[in-house]
Image (cartoon, rainbow, N blue to C red; front, side, top):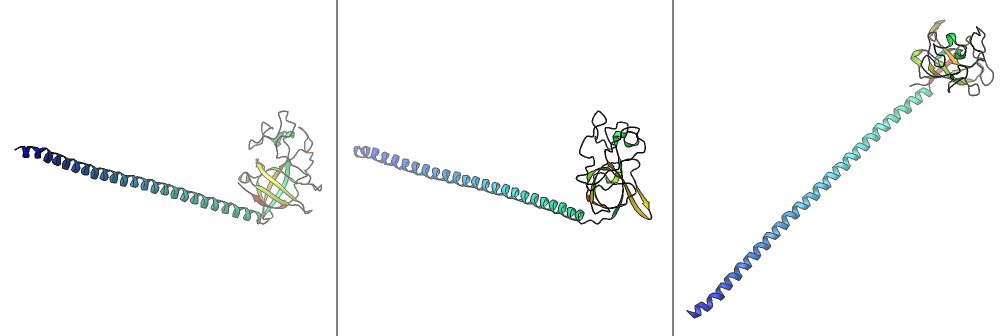
Amino acid sequence: MINRIKDLPRQGVQAVQHTIDESRAARRDFGRKVIGYFGVAFLGFLGAIYISTKNVSSADFTNINSQSVVQEQSMNSEQSVDVEVQNAQYDLIVQPFYFNPIRGGVNCNDDCRFTRSNVRVLEDDYKTPFGPFWWDPSLNEGGAACPENMLGYTLEALLPNGEKATFYCFDTGGDIIEFTENGQPVIRIDILYEDGYGPDSGKIWNHPKTAEGYKLTDDLRLEARVIAQP
């Protein structure tokens, strides 16, 4: 019995040690499984981030490409319009005259500081020109009242002496019309010009002149073309 009793602790120890070893092995296996599971999950998470980033980058790249294509098409369109305008023929006939709001009367509306299209052209004293549209003979250019459907257009006209004049259609008026003369359409334009006369000056005209001194009178019929439009 003693021998058996002596053997029990050893057998018990062995049994316990065997249980501990199995328990440790089980924990190790469980730990490996947990680490493996989380490792796979972590790798999956990283993969998802990579794919998402790649998709966003691809989308951004696609958007950038799309914007570039649209921008390029827009630029090409604008360039083609510019080329068409620059190559336009002198297919218009223009009759030039002028108006001076300082004169008052038919030269302006109720408030002569502003044109019919509400552009300011005079200071508050009603005598001093204001703004960039007054005729500049050194440049042969200035603002003009044109038919209403031409507001925003820029016209280039050929003068009989070989000069060119540029008119910016910034205003309109009741007498500014297109009419037919000898079977041809003629466009009446009034150049904004300070002729040196004030109110009640009657029909005394001092027509605008070009850089070379050529008078722009209403008996002229000038070949013209549109060189810019809104």
